[in-house]
Image 1 (cartoon, rainbow over the protein chains, first blue to last red):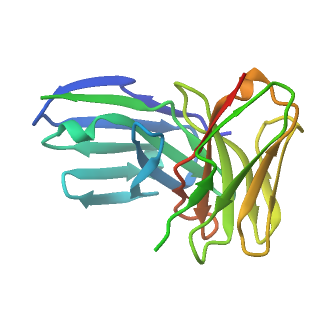
Image 2 (cartoon, rainbow over the protein chains, first blue to last red):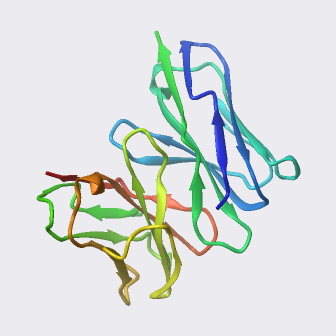
Length: 109
Length: 111
């Protein structure tokens, strides 16, 4: 399967700071998603972004498929942004998602 | 619109028992996938079903099985439970190989 590496594994930010989370993957993909997992375990969809750039409020994401990486930007972080962020990819022609081990973000007031 | 719904939300079972977890996909979605997430790790793929046929299987033992019904809802069955089966089980719904949406999960504890 596809190897997915996320960095950093842990990140502590002061409220209001900006951050960049990175996702590297080992093969070509036709699906890439970013999720935020809340304390109750639910995976919240942030972006479906197999290529290109998207923005949604304080969050934006960029995927450079030819170089096999994706970035998630969080600006003006808030305490409610705390949690684990997962990158997941789907291989071309396959049906399942491969997840990274996540980045645990803690935003302190 | 209802999202992906899973039941039950929590479950405690004894080693050796059998468990059935249920998932209802988003209306109009014909693909359901199951994932297992153990503490501290990312979810791992177990099965995908599309139009009631198995379309993918992860690296899990034969104790794990699943099926999809005509209304596209799905069941995940696990036999002969082991302590290591304790995990959060997540169901995902999608049109096919497109954006996946997850339910809130079933937290299974095996004692």
